[in-house]
Image (cartoon, rainbow, N blue to C red; front, side, top):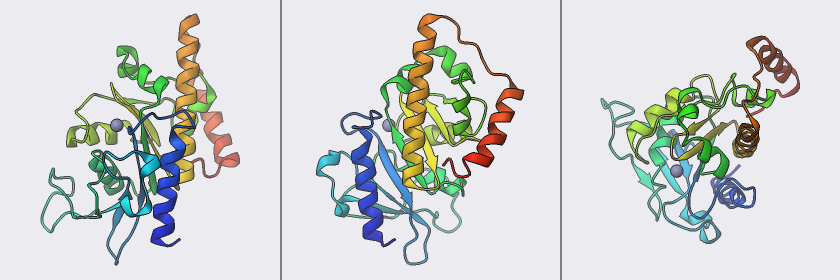
Length: 233
Ligand SMILES: [Zn+2]
């Protein structure tokens, strides 16, 4: 894949979020791990630009590495290359790539049902539990909810990194959701799956207290996923 092809796939993924029902307006952002000139970095959607108007030239490249001697997760701007400013959530993406070698792509959005759940104290406390076996697509027996922090801050990316330990997706309290993938397609598919599960859980909660699958049942699901879904993203 050339860099222009990578940029085009980012624009395409960002545009697909709204018709897929996981985003509205200019919210959300999409990134792809991208080496440039031998340097680790990422390509990310720009700040404050409608996705219908975004072109490949608006995509911004950011270096992953910190200047020598600096904390790799220090709260200072990284070298950016582009005609526009990177997404205001650039450091959420940057910090996740810096600490998650398995992440090749990241989709962050504000899906209505996942975000509504992420406003409830019970979700803050226990995330979305194993009410349905597909919870396993996020990598564990629940989908955690990272505590609230202001968008774009180190505090938010620290909370998200912890909520994503052993997981490929999490909710962000009073904010939205994040999904990691081995490709943009996988990250987008997972983000859609998280919103679908959030909608199902939201519906089930209207009717009563949903039953939960126990650890043994979920262990069987994880074992079958390893055989049938070798790359769930
Ligand atoms: Zn956001």
